[in-house]
Image 1 (cartoon, one colour):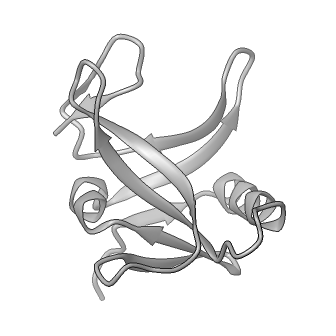
Image 2 (image 1 turned 90 degrees about the horizontal axis):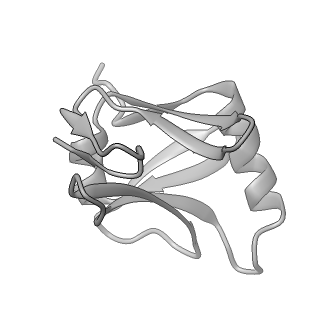
Length: 111
């Protein structure tokens, strides 16, 4: 059995469910990707998706669908997606074993 490119904590599953319950009409899933930005080179991107692209990897987060872009599936392989609410931050947090380093503010990473 092969490892999923991304697994989800219970908190992440609950947040995905909440986001999709309030999503714009036509939204079918959340899409997780990476974008080239920040001082370390890559940043995580989470957005609404109306449909899967041919190259997306489709995963289930509880009863909901999360799509992973092809580029992100390589970078995220073996990662855990969590949702945290801290004093000054709330959002998805990725525990990525492939990240070799992050920038000082934690917004971007490199592999």
